[in-house]
Amino acid sequence: MNKLTFANIEKSISPERLATYKTDGATNEVALARYIYNIELSKSFYPIINIFEVTLRNSIDNALKKFFDVQDWSDVIPLTETERRMIDEAKIKIVQREQLYSINQLVSELTLGFWVALMGRKYNSQKFRSFMIKNMFHECPSEQKRSAAVQKNLAEIRFLRNRIAHHKRISHWTDLKQKHDLILDFIRWMSQDMHKIAVNNDTFDVVFKSGIAPFERFVREQL
Image (cartoon, rainbow, N blue to C red; front, side, top):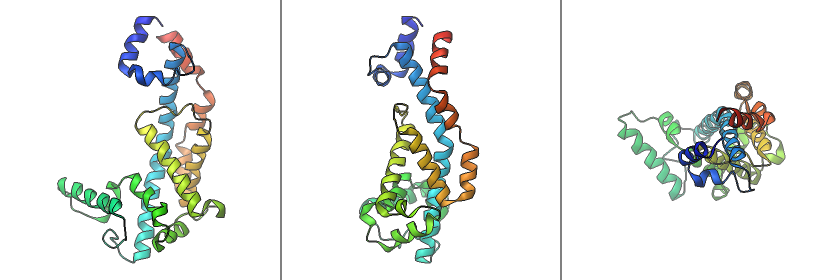
């Protein structure tokens, strides 16, 4: 790859973003291969993150319906100002789209940040929170079912998900395989059937085991 080609690619990606792949003094070719490898790794996470998010929010929704004995729990659940505002803003967005409001529309509209927040420490004293953990994670080992463990693990998954969503580097994480397995564990704890779907659509292990070599070869031979 000649200097002009790299300069054009660097301009498209941005020097600042590409610089994160060169912090150890890597060559331009290696940095670009790492960037492409990161894309493939991030892409491999999308199926299981999608399944994780959908399963989590609907599991919480079902647990709250059962706890409060209502179909729409949004007005009866005791929330802090932050989460209450998130619900209000989500309802406004639904109305602005000229859609008929329903709890299903609300559940789809609320962000992963909202659902993770419901598991947070600020709700430790709320009975609905302990009810959710007890009734959602059926296959979860007891040591992982403690509030602190659930909160820590969900926060880690959300952090990874947000880095991927914002196209940031994850390929250098030494515990990436463990985080991948943690997502699958959470899906399995909530639903064995959804776990089967997740595993069937999961390509992480193939990409991870192949490593950066295929992308170094592409950069060397094609660019």
